[in-house]
Length: 192
Image 1 (tube, helix red, strand yellow):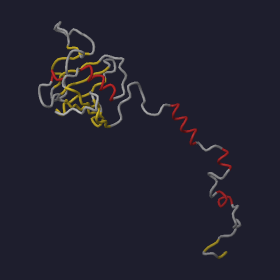
Image 2 (cartoon, helix red, strand yellow; image 1 turned 90 degrees about the vertical axis):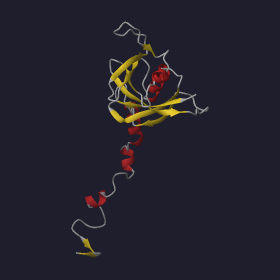
Image 3 (cartoon, helix red, strand yellow; image 1 turned 45 degrees about the vertical axis):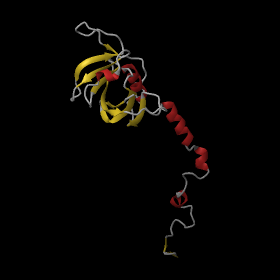
Image 4 (cartoon, rainbow, N blue to C red; image 1 turned 135 degrees about the vertical axis):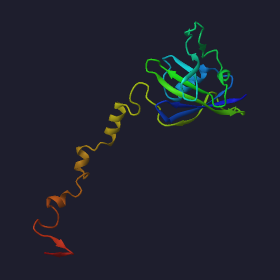
């Protein structure tokens, strides 16, 4: 069975993308779930795929995660029932993927190519490349404040370490507590 290879870009930064392979017969719902996993988003919100033109503007049908009725009173295509391959019309087919309409997370989806050989060791959809740090769905991504405090405490040098010599290097010479007296200067090994 043929494999469809897609690149999913985050709209705000084209250096952040995920490459995903899926079987030709797999549904848009399976593709939707793999995008959420690839970008570390939850699945609490609705989403839609839209057929797109070269300029990344909606130019065709909507494929929605929920059953909707569009403006012409015809039901929108359902992600559950629509295989991705059914809407592949050109070699570089493009889609817009919009997740959580309230936040309007927008991703640009482009068909990279078609592979003829399936790897029996892989489960499809298969995320085979991740580039860039995914955007944070609900705020700042990375170290949580609890984790940051834990790291700071682990490497923090307290008063006990300072008493044992950490941080006091060079203080004796600056305070005059070394071998030379405060009024003498040594140049070339001779006292002046």
